[in-house]
Structure formats: C-alpha cells, structure tokens
Length: 206
Image (cartoon, rainbow, N blue to C red):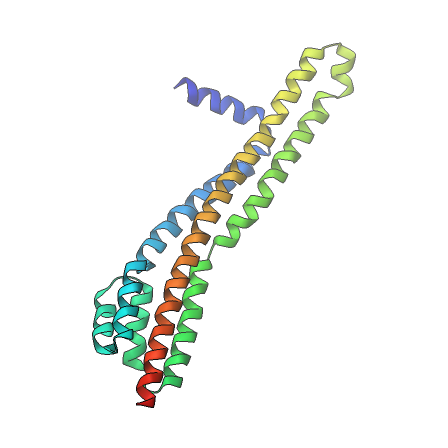
C-alpha cells in the first residue's frame, strides 16, 4: 500500500506531462497484449515450416497440403488455400504474393505506434523536466533564499524525464520483440513459398 501511495505522490510531483506519459504507457501495454495474442494465433511455427518444406521437396504436394490444412496459423492456411485455389504456376505465384502482402501488413499493424512512443516519451519527459526547472529557478524561489527548495524542485522535475525514459524503454523492448517474431514468421513463410514454387516448377517440366 505504501508503494502505491509513493507512486501516486511521485506521479503528481512530475507535473501535467505525467498524464500523456501515462497514456503512452497504457497504449504500449494494450498494443503488446493485442499483438502477442495475434502473433500467437498467426504463427505456424518453425517446426511446421521445416516439415512442410521437407514434404514438398519429397514431391508429395498432396501430403504437404494436408499437413498445411491440419496445422494452425496464417502461413499454413495460406499454403492450403494456395494449392486449392490456384492452377498454373503463374496463378500460384500471384496468389501467394498477394496474400503474403496482406499478411505482412497485418503483422506490421500497430508496431508503428510503438516506434512513435519510443521517440515521443523521452521528449515529453524532457519537456516536463524543463518546465519543472523553470519553476525551481524562478525569481520567487531565489528571493526567498531557499536553496533547498530549488534543489528539491529540480529533483521533482527529473521525475518526468525518468518516467519518459522508462516508457520509451518499455516500448522499445516490445517493438524489438514483435519485430523479431515478425521477421521469423516472414522467413518461415518465404521458405515454404519457395519450396512450393520449386515443386510446381519441377512438376510443370515433367
């Protein structure tokens, strides 16, 4: 309980800029939860990609399609739909390219907001600190002869900067984590697409 009381006290000491920083932190948490749930459902996994590629390279496209149909995730569903809804290699390639573009766009959704918060939060914190220091070094404090009040005001002003940096670090960690997962999912998808197109090329030549 004391920790919560101290946290509220520091929040109020940070000034008005603490409110937009609080909004930024809530936004980061909300985006992180939403993206985690979405990525968990959309990721077919590296194990599926390896199994699918091995099956396709074994020239058993029917078995690979059945494997994709039974697997979870957007990549598996896309591969199953591609074989069922495409005829020639050109149609297959066009289908994969269009659907992959849509899928990657959904993966990147909301990540730009995290990047904006990474940049904006320290600036908001710095703004709050500057405003607080202006108040601490005002002529009224100097005339009153209260150096302790000035140093105390500087300490309170730095709360905004510290909060801004914490929010930025939290946002940066979330952005880096989801960017890494997105890259892995795209890599797995491209490997499966490449294996499928190579198999279709071999079948067309046969």
